Amino acid sequence: MVKEYSPSLDAALDTVAEYLQQARSALFITGAGISADSGLPTYRGVGGLYDSEATEEGLRIEEALSGDVFAVRPDITWKYLIQIEENCRGAQPNAAHSAIAALDRHLDRVMVFTQNVDGLHRAAGSREIIEIHGNLQHLVCTGCEHEEAVPDFSGREVPPLCPDCGAVLRPNVVLFGEALPEESLDQFIDALQEGFDIVFSIGTSSVFPYITQPVVFAAGSGIPTVEINPSMTQLSEIVDYYIPLGAAEAMTEIMRRAGFPMPV
Picture 1 (cartoon, rainbow, N blue to C red):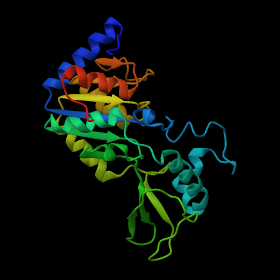
Picture 2: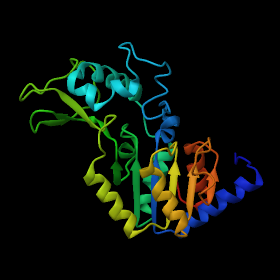
Picture 3: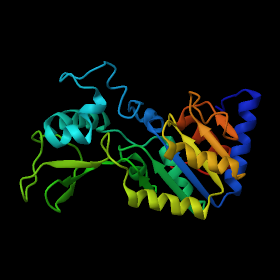
Picture 4: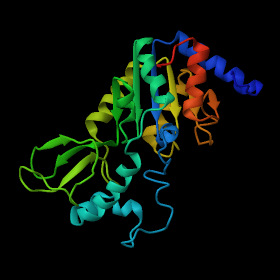
């Protein structure tokens, strides 16, 4: 059954689909909202998981998950990293992740620049991904070169220790107060300079400059820009097309109208 939309939204969906049909390259900037239909919480940074003012230790969640606290009390940071991983465990890519991955077969280049650490873009099959905040399933040692990929954190001591040198392991993620990885940022800047035919912002609250600036630049350069988000953000009045829908519904509808088959 084809869902009916308001005339303005219907026209916006049609136009975005037409642009996507004509595009040879597309950039998708994604945040926690794209994983909502996979059952994951949409959080400000880390989480609607944490609605109270302080953790059990009397710290704000941003402090508990900071590089400074990890340096002196890795057990506290790991406690909340494990809670986040448990909430992500078993989640599968939804239609939005799958649609973006499917576009790899139709466009010359599809880049995903994501704030998410859940690994769902990779699981869906997207090929060019910059996980700017890292990935929870990739552990690195703080004392040596040891690293490992893990399916989840179950059965781990807290904090987990390196099997080679005994130092504390950590997920390869950006904790609060830590700098974004320069290599990944350089890769993203290089891609922006090469240019894209259409730019999407999906499911992000758009509070960080490195998320908003590429969209603002694209909009000012005449590149079609699209925001998909049930809630308006500071980008909503800047982009060419604001789609007030969930990511899975919007991307499924755009793919249908563009004539691109969705993965089974």
